[in-house]
Length: 567
Image (tube, rainbow, N blue to C red):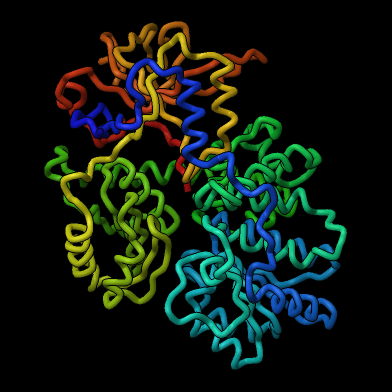
């Protein structure tokens, strides 16, 4: 059941999953554990030889190592691609081989292989190209490579077009025996490394397991089945790494304790730092950092702060273009602006879709071209929408809920009109409000370390296994105050438990009455002492109109500080 009442942040609350009657919270969590099939995943990682082309890939790589051929690793510029490329680079380096690594610059090169990059590889006398998290949509470019005598191994997981490259291909969707859910780009590269190292004593297995975990979380693939196991093993591997290991240094810079790291820490604190290099500068900085360059790790901190500030500036600008009233908001959020950075448009699109429940296309303008990033809510396949209107596009690619495209500026309005009509055709535009899916009712007396332990058993959380969300009805908030820079966050006490509401500081004025609270549970640690903490996601007045709750439902506080954004 989706409640018609909107909350202070403009969301609807889906309470249909709440069991009737007073059901113990831990019983609800046990039911969730079973319904999400968290106890039925594989006990071991998927056999890498399930890929039909894996024998050919391993043979070609081993031959290049034995004959001293010049090898190039080419990846995407995001965290998934960078971690995948790092694993492949480490594999060659373990054998004393220095391959060429070519990570595309988001602005200068754009996404994926291009004719210019092909000529660069030819000029550098490359004999074998291995792609990481890219390549499946580059049939023309790979044909050009083949014409110049360059073989290609494609490792990718993006949507495969009808015409695939003439290459050795490792792609889960093109491998009939590969079980769902499919891995990320880093997960595919990890399988290739595992196969190549099968006959060796793999000294770097902990680092590579951790890199595969980071890429898996960063790319928001379904964290059930084998992906869940990759993340569990990768988080455990972090604890086995020496303090001098590059990933441990990156964790330290983000103030994450390796023995307490969770998928949330990786997704919101580590992945954004790796992504910041490709968003704000050059992705090779992140690869150098993951290989142990301390200067590069320090640079990631600086770039991430710049990314946060620039994202917040662009979000405020984007919010100014949106109607105040939800009923006036179009089914598709579309905005093109030359001031938007190439590396920021995906974050803006993601946040706007999260806030409005609508598909979004956000573009930056570069002379006579538009480079756009798209996001969509569950149930609307944004890449398939681009396929239906590919006549407007020069290139495109992506997944079900995230995509990118390039087009001529003169075709921007026509594309937006076509996508608007597409949304109206393929979505129920009456149900476009963002929705919080609540799992169980919670009372202050339910909160305990035993309950936190039951929640920990369900980790790692992510796509396919979201962190449980609780409803506290008619909660009384005490000791309410705004905290953080410019009072951006809300701090209070509910019952005997401390609570924090990130980016909810502007609603402190409404907290002198009982409220329904949508929340998660976490742990607050101060001076070595741990205690449960309520993390408020949303609030609403019981049985009251949405307009009485908040009038500025879609806008963040104008002076809110930069916040962590999932890549």
